[in-house]
Every structure is written in structure tokens, then in C-alpha cells.
Image 1 (spheres, rainbow, N blue to C red):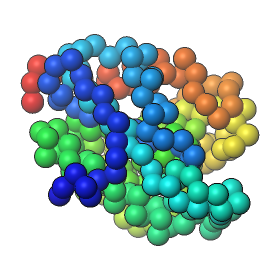
Image 2: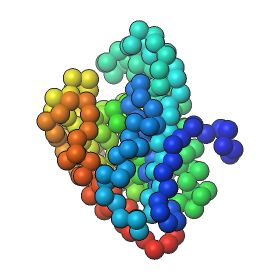
Image 3: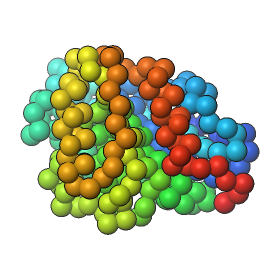
Image 4: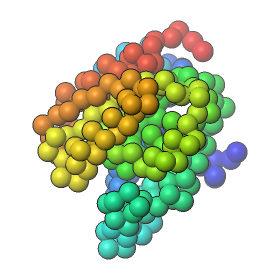
Length: 228
């Protein structure tokens, strides 16, 4: 694998050697810069050694947005389940799997990698992580929804059948209604996952209380290590 085959990314290295990684996917129309400023607010001690990787989605026409070209993980034709382009979802999932493999090549085992995402990026994080053949440290799903649930159910990876999942959603979200977050949580819990779920009185965004909860969760699933 060469650097040319990977999605472009913003990377933030820890003060010392990296012993863990968070691959964090942005939402529709944003880019990898979107969540990079949040890292200092997470309150992670330097000893946690977490590298943050924020990939940029490719720019593609998005049918739901009038065909405008924008950063997107896949095309959305409509808000119903059939309107999400499964071929595009699979392409993006394959690209994120390459980023996981790169972290493995850099000495970070899958069990020290979290897949995270907001909105459309969270949908890809769930689709990728639940199907990943090696055990991950966790999956973070922020203001997001489940895509292609039938495909996920058919392709679930035994290694991640009890992977920790953090979910947060805004009760006032006009773009991804909280009902979609509720469906996602119920779908997961009914199939045996323990989901740490949080609702906040906010729109399609993140808030300080949520960021603090994310930091606490990350400290739990990526405990401090002195080395690899």
C-alpha cells in the first residue's frame, strides 16, 4: 500500500510515541478540519499516546443536495433507507479499512483503534467497524444513523460482536432526527451490543458536555500505556 492510494488526512500526533489511534470521519459537506480543533478539549493525558486521523471524503455530486459537488462519503438520493447508495458506502468503508491497515503497519494494533464519525461519517464508521474482521477498541457514532442494516446484519464480524459503542445525538436535530439515533441504538442493543448513549438538547452539532463524555469514553477504551 502506498500513500497515493489512501484518502488525504489531517493527523495530530501525541507528545510521545503513538500507541493508539482514532480515525474520525466528518459529516456531509465538511472535511477533515471539522473535528480537529476538538482534540485538546477531550482531556486526554499525554500518556494515552493517541494519534488522531481526520480523513477528507472525496468530492462527489450529492443528489439530495441538487447534484452539487461536495465532500461526501457516498451519494444520498433521498432520506429513506433505499436512498443511500450502498455501492458508495462500501467504497468508503474500504477506504477507511485501508486507514486502519496503515495504523497496523505503523505499529498500532486493531484493538487500539477507534473508528469515529459524525452524521454521514458516523454511518460509515458503524458500517465499517461492525464488519471489521479484527477486534477494534470501539466505535463512536455522533448524530448519526444506521445505513444498510440488512448488509451489516449479514456481514457482522464475530470479533466485533461486543465492541464498545459510544452514541450521542441532539434531541433538536432537524437534519438527522433523534428518532434515527433511537432506531440505531435499539437495533444495536437488540443484537447484543452495549451502547453508551447520550442525548443532548442541541441541533445537528456537538456540545461541550458531549465532548467531555467522548473524552471520558476514550480514556476507558484506550487506556494509558507506556509502550506498544
